[in-house]
Image (cartoon, rainbow, N blue to C red; front, side, top):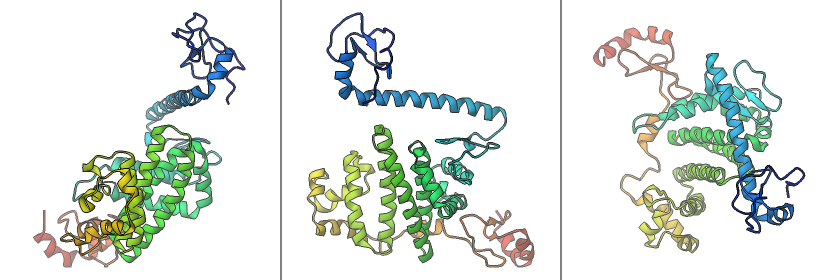
Length: 371
């Protein structure tokens, strides 16, 4: 138990009664740690500690968050005055990281790659059907992922610190987006890349999960949502590869998450199938009583739908496909790393030199397709 009685309980405040015994007296004094409740004396405070501890911890955490937010706000104002992009300033357990600042001990040397990836991840926004949204920043995410792979022990030690939980949370989102790009590309090589990225995300998520033990409900919920999204990508990849046994084990977890958080029927991706396919109520009891054959029937049901002979969307595949230079035939390494001809927008080139050399052959097509 945290000792809250080493110092005076606190200055007298206006509390209606003692939180422990309920006595109404003018001698009620605040808990010196959180100041959210009052007691008539130390004995009552000690007796009530078991009931009050969680409320006290949450209140202190909220105060610390407010204090940290004010400190960040102050530094952001300084950065704005100096003309710095504020998204490149990050608070870590080991100190603040930003342009021109020395990297504190304990922070990975290439932490700037994480900041750059987060900037693109948060500004990409949701995409329309034919747009890429934040998927278009594959190159930025890949650079960050490569650095995590090269310096895994350094990054995992960084994520192990409970005060760096937000960085673990951001990283899971970035890696999940990168895995989505590879999964949608649906080539043998990209499927392997997707699996490797998901494995790394799972390692980061373990650290985030440990940091969330005893945390507030919002953080625990956020951790559960990230795990749900990661498992959904794992499920889609397994379905794409025909690994239906893996899909069966993931289905229980995914449907269980939707049931636990009471996700609306319209927003469900898995739980609704219990009723739609088996005719059973989509609740915890039905979910727990599902047999392996029933889960298999649910998992394989999409293959019976028209147009689902292939286990992935051709539109998705085309959207994230790597383009080929019209001059030399070289393929992109990441999405949109080649630029389209500014005149016709119908072909891409790996560079200006290739575009110049290809102009004679491209001229007729360019004039025809001119926009």
